[in-house]
Length: 281
Image 1 (cartoon, rainbow, N blue to C red):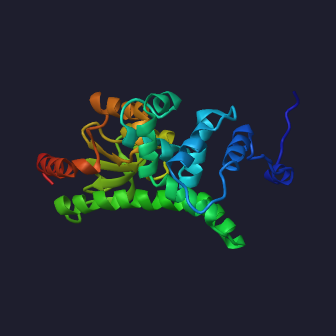
Image 2 (image 1 turned 90 degrees about the vertical axis):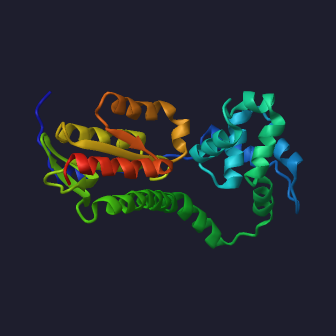
Image 3 (image 1 turned 45 degrees about the vertical axis):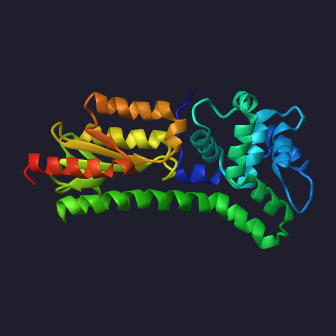
């Protein structure tokens, strides 16, 4: 093939939008199912059963999407809530058929009856439509950022208790093998002896590949004798246990010193104090 030289302007001038239709067969099936919900002033347990058991050939996956739509939950959030409330045994159709009453109890406890009543009887105006678009677009990202920052602030409060002002936050540190970004470098980014990364999954909006990639970048750059602590949380980990297993393996083979959650805050604080003494900080 002949070698062709192109300019940036030539490429930009030839760009066109990539159109995609969000309404796939599953979305169509969800809308068909939702439209079978009757218009009435009050709903009860039998209405939940009808929503889930609808004999339209579209299956239990559509049932769960309908439930999530009424509750305003994403697929991951609904799965996380069901797993936490139902306990071991799954959240699919086999679990529902094996323990239908327990499954329905959980959906009631999650507020599905009230959500159905409120949704069906609401009288929306045009601004409500735009509000929903904003909530599921930018709003979802904002929620993730706020939850992620809350976790970072939680960790920083403990770091301040132990090290005072002898740390740098949200910085690029200098390691033995190059530079990398981290949430906290102690005592400084230039000579970090303790590196702390605060990552929420299902709380910060971070993708799994991003979290592992960020951690691996720190591992690759830091000195071998510097400690790397990972502070994480978020119930979505329960639905992605295999991904958490990858991080646990990094701890078990010595690449991460320790993984903590908010429920382990006292252990985190006490082990920071140990590290402070060991490094003479």
